[in-house]
Length: 408
Image (tube, rainbow, N blue to C red):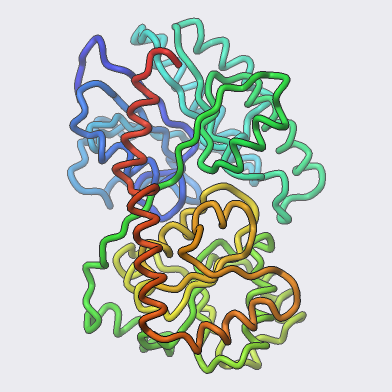
């Protein structure tokens, strides 16, 4: 870890850990990896010490352990925050506790002009206090608003109201809003214009390389055998199992299609939502519908994407979605819900469907009739789209420019 007086210290708050599969978690891992030899930036990364998604540095390579609560990885100083068991409020507590730790470290080491980058808008009521405290050291607060968290169906009306208020207060009390979607940037400017927010657009990243697993790798073949799947015999969905990702529409429409393929659904556990969908759709009576659990092995998941005959994407709340970028980087044919966020990313490299009856069913039937050459052409366009606008090198280079731009 470098100790240069002119280094730009950047504190990252909001990811649960490093190395696990998740949007912010993957972003932080890639950011510090690509910048590990950069002498001008010193990262400080907050991680969860306990609870769901806790940091386990033992799964990482080349870690230097400093103490029970601190370690160095990719030249980044990582510090763990211990949390009480307080249910859903834990996420808010985590960000506040991490911010408090950042400020204490800045003050103890007399760091001048630090940047604190907060991912997600969970702590709006506390934003003014911490912004003022960080500004006292010539520091700046950057915020990534993520997507429209206040629209998510999983939240009750009071919680959604809190999210909206929190978003407003965080936009008001920061120096730069980094939006991972042009549509989110437009939304911030239009809805919070009275604060004259300074914004910039930097998307999430993805890879276009092929998986390191071969088609006959035992890991892949065992997974296929366990799940009753085979190469190019399934459409794929990957994403959190929540209503706003339109699982109900995708499953219903696939059941209405004439496809002989399977629908493999890689998702998180949500027993209550699963029971509701079964009650509504009776999908268990359709042998094509297969919930196959989670896959956190990155190479295996990449190979599963590559071997899918098509990818279905129903996300409609949020900015640049990681699972969409990863699908475009791996899967040839992508069938996306036609909303601004997805159009912005996919452009002409994907096909689009609406939530109207029969829209997706007809698109699946159309996809089944497409030739291998047609699908391969979509695949080339999708990978070109990722390479041009969403490669991790391009994204991390943009962050370097923003972090080192003294004019911001």
